[in-house]
Image (cartoon, rainbow, N blue to C red; front, side, top):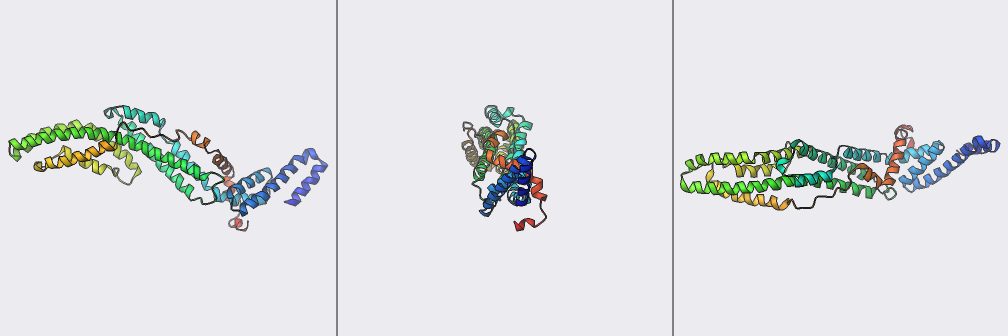
Length: 334
């Protein structure tokens, strides 16, 4: 390394126009290598990598290459983090705030099933992919102060939470309205079944109430279909046909809309169901403030983490070199 520098120095004296700039680059590259070694010995892989990157791309000394590859291997997983983030935004719903406002203010009977299902699925994918990026980031255990990993991780968590909140708001609005309708149906069927049981025998009451229950099922069917579709769309985030929350919801619907050939128990059962439906009304209030989406697009996130993005850019340039630039186990000697 110093032999090369000495040779270039002599050549620069002989022909400064041809070799002067190259000598300066070679000299600066050695200075960067020395600084990189100090950072490396202090376990500051971030600074050691940036310095060795600068050195190697000024002048390709083998020592700079060794340090670049060694430190780069400790940070290369940041490219996988960025890839996951890119994917999450690439398939994310557009104008999430605007869509949330639309669903909040539009009657759920007017929701387009295909569009709202797609919205839920994309929010779930976004949330899942962001969590994968967070998991990779957590696995990088080196000194993180230099490249603000902790702040990056916090912002990714906030973004993931906002995606989850957005999804839950959509499902919550649908459940809120449907619960209100079910409560009204429940009260109506309770009154009619109680009255019918007081006038005729059980067999006649069941026969006379069947058309009334059938009409209630038909009236509620659009809302039942919406909730079922939302559960199926949300189930992509879980292992199963339906989301975990759907089992309890479906049971409530069945308890309201069917007396299962045991009409005498129906009045008691519906009083319990009323309390369950009230909990949905209290949990999901349409007047609730909509969640604030941390970042609407990838550019906004990257702009807030420019130091990270500088590192990502350099790692992208060196990716092939880091993965294949040195013989196996050679870096053990650095």
